[in-house]
Image (cartoon, rainbow, N blue to C red; front, side, top):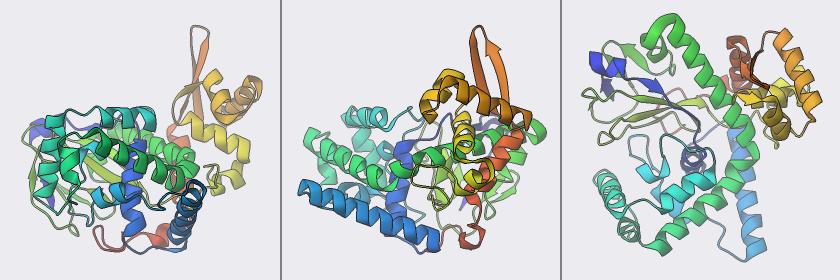
Length: 345
């Protein structure tokens, strides 16, 4: 598969504004059903299945999340319905689901008709295409069930790692421009101007035709094809293979071993770009403790702090972003797939 850029496309390349909990949930549903993995991914898969069955037993419901798993892509070259991967992402999963439930019927029909041209869809997808409220609610419930078991326990760590990748891309952009970014997205992607090549993914050539491209760091997936019908297509590139190196509270285990749990949690929340008050609320620390930890991290060159009026804001430095990225992938290099689009995804 190859993505073709014009000069206008290169000028319109941008990095996604924020990680999407809905997109991460969708991609994790694919990863749960398909492909092999190393011990960390297998542990996540077993834990997720156990959590879903426990929740089903407690509510006398079916253990699966069939509507979500049936709509998720079944091979790397299959498109994911746009309603399951919204961009730009909203701050919370609930807000993304609310937007899903309010999607106009014409958009639903066009979205699912496009997907159906590339792969079979279940019969009940016709109800979704018609905007049937019951079908949309069933899909929304399935998303929440799967998210609670597969993503929510790890979301803080995943979110921090994806934010850190965004910060790293911005640094690359400043130092080497858009071509530096495109040449380092993934070891199995090759930037050969003016084409981004994905040698191991089967699929058509994509011509951006001046629309540019949104680059969205993702978890659980190596590549999801950009929909050529999007006003500005999105390329989801794998920044985090799986949450195998996070604890159940979302903190990176290597980072916690280096910095301690509280300081590691502070660094991960700072990846969002936060005030001291929000930092304290997100970590469960007192404002004084949160400020003290941020000061230590700033002195170590991992965090930068600036004041706007009476509010103090914290953000990652390039070194802090690198540390988060390294800790999120520590111990997983040997588990990365040899082929970008192979069944071992």
